[in-house]
Length: 336
Image 1 (cartoon, rainbow, N blue to C red):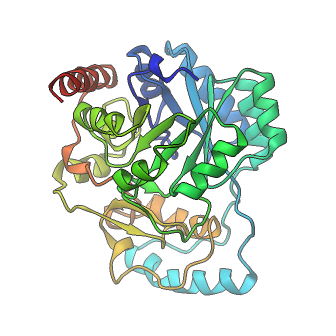
Image 2: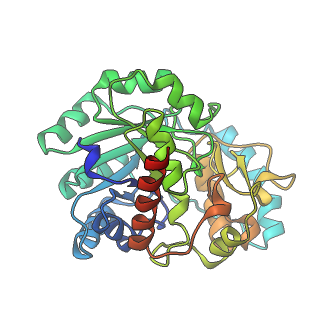
C-alpha cells in the first residue's frame, strides 16, 4: 500500500459519524477516507460504498469489527441488565423487552468484498487467513489495528499492508484484541514498534498537521485522525455532541467500559462517574444492553466518543480541514 499517496487517513467512525460526504470529501482532498461499518448490515455497507462513490470518493477504506470470542452467559446478561436498570430510570428511558443482535460479521465481510474498497481495515483482533486471501484476490489492501507491540508483531507476521498503532489518547474504543487490555501512550507505542518493517499508521489524539509531522518523524508512515472530523458539517455528529466538543477543555475526556464492555474514550459524562453501572457484560453484549438508553437519553447518557485532543477540534468542511492539516504538516516538517 503506497501511503505516500495520502496526506493522512480519516479514521473510520462507526455509528453514522463517517457519512458518505465525509469519506468522499476526505478522498477528494487527498486523504484516505474510511467508512466505519462496524454496526452496518451487509445491505447498508453496499449502500454506504455506493454513496461514497456517488459523492466523488474514489479510493477509500471500509472498517469492520472482529467478532468477540464468546457471548455473555445468561447470568452475566441478567446481572448487567439489573445494574443498568437505575441508569435507564435516571434517564427517563423505559427498559425495552428486546435488544436486537448486531450484524453478522460474515455477512458484513461478504458485502465489503462485493463493495471492493481500496482498503479493508479492522479492529479488535486478527483476520483469518482465508479472509485475507479473499481480499488479496480482489486487490484490497489490508490494515489491522494494534495497541501493543505484540499485537503489531502478530499483524506484521500475518502479512498486512499497514498497521494502525492506536495510542490510549484515541477517541472511541481501544482497538486491541483484549477487551480489557490496558492502553499505551502513542509516543511510547511508536517507539516500541519503530523497527517493524510494515508501514505504521499513528492514531490517538492527533488533531492538526504538526501532530502528523511529529508522528511521521517518529517512524509512522502517516497519521490517522478521527476526532478532528467530528465537527465538520458533513459528519453525522449529533448537535449535543458537537456542542460538547466545542465546549471541551484539555481534560474533557475519560475512559469507560460501561458502555460496551470494551474500554473506550469520550467526553466525560454519566458513563464515566458514579452513575455508571459496576456490573458489565462482555463486549458486545453490553453494547446491545446500553444501545436503547444511549439512543433515547439526553447528552449525559450518550456515548460522546472523542480523543484527548477534543478541545482542539475545528468546525471546518472536510476538504478544507484536510487541506489545512496538510499545509500545517508541510510547514511543521520544514521547520522541524
